Each structure stands twice: as C-alpha cells, then as structure tokens.
Length: 304
Image 1: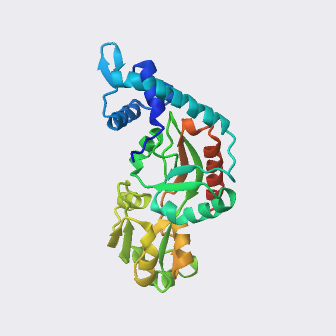
Image 2: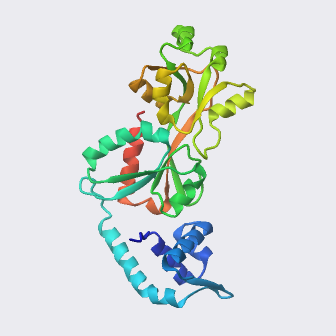
Image 3: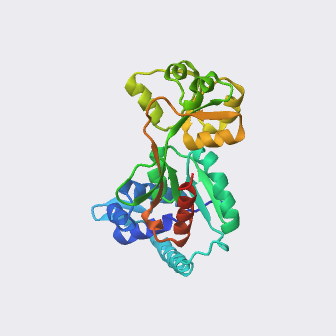
C-alpha cells in the first residue's frame, strides 16, 4: 500500500493558487528548495508533472486541475479537524511524533521520556529517526520529523530552537585502570597518561568533528586511538572488559557508570561544552500536542 504524506497537500494547494514556487514557499514559511523537494515527491506519487514552468509561472497540468477540487476539500476537512482537536489531551491522544536524535540521546534520554509518557500519555507513539545533522533542517521543513534534539545551531526563519541545557565532557574508563589510581582524590586524569592510554573514538556517521577533536587538533595533541566506533551505545561493555578509555559527554559518562564497572574523571584540559537544543518548524509553534511534548522534553532534559 502506498504511503501518502499529508504535509504535501498544503504544498500542492499553495502552488495551485500562486503558480510560483517562491510565493508558495513564502506562504508556507518554507525554503524554496523544500517546496521543490515536496513537488518532486508529489510528482513521484502521482506519476504526473502536475505543474509545468511557463512564462506565466507554474501552470497546472490537466491531472492537477482534476485533482484540485478533491484535494482542496480534503485540505478543508483536515483544517477543520485540526481546529477541533487544538486542545491536546495527553491521556487520550493517539498521535505519533517523529523525533530526530543521536544514539547518545537515545541512550541517555529515551528511557526517561518513555517512562514519563507511559504515565502521562500512554497512547502516544514516538518514532526516533537518525539523520546527518546537516539534514535536520530539511527534515523539519518537509514534515519528515516533528522535533529535533541535539547540538543544534540557532537558526533564523522557519525553524525555532530552544536552549535546554549545557553538557561538559568526561574521561571514562574501568575502575581498575591506571588513570583512576593516578588521578587520586583530584579526580582529574593526568595529561601524559591520558594521551598515552589507548582510546575509543566515537565518531557518529556524517557528524562534524566533536569539540574534543577540535581541542586536540588546535593544540597539536595526539592520542592513541585503538578503536573507532560510530555509536556510544557499545562503550559500556567494551570499556568494562578492556583497558581502554573514552572522552564522552558527561551525561553519557553518567549513564555508562550506572550499568558497568566504569568511573568518570575530569579531563586535564578545557573542552568547550555542548549546548543541547530543541528544534521544530514554525508551523508546529501553536500545535497543542507539539507544545505539550516540547515542554515535557524540556522539563526532563533540564534536570540531567
């Protein structure tokens, strides 16, 4: 069965009325590339060009004109339904929310979120999606995701961001590692021993260098990388069984220490902190369900 994205209907409606990608983008608070991408998806679904560029603008095809009345009525019904359900009731809501986050977010945050949702909104569904960070904006603009959580840049225009908290970095290793004995009561990993230790480097796919990598490179410091992995989720068992160390966000370090014989130490040099933000599209700004979920997430993350 073909799956249809209802976010494409307003794009079709705006293009039909304005006969212009730029004008439709302006009305919908989307970028022109986002509208063009939506039009490509519509063409793929309908197997019709739908709108043809002419000197007078984007003229609808016969297929588009024949579909316009039913789609317009469908859009009206959708709008009416949304207005009737504007007051969001979490205990009875059955919506699905698509959230972009990294595996570190899944590891640290998802257990708390799902525990809270089972009580407050038992019928909500959360779909976690992972994309390269540079595609977050497009996913929010085109409706492929409802929210994003992570080290998001502040933006102007259609994407709204909300600062939640700031996270630092820790050195993690097993309790019997020599770094722990050398650190003693200071709980600071000695620089020379840290650089000489064998490291696990976590490099998520398609994510730019972390503040750790940039700090090391800026100072000309090199560490011994024994293992490179794309996810934080595997660190617990590896560090618990091998004499390896890793430098991770402090929330990840705290989570690791809960489930394995792992301790965390302060790094012997300053690493710029990571600012965690929530991001969403302007069209979600007044949506009752989105507002409720955003406030819940902000509450949970503000108390790491």
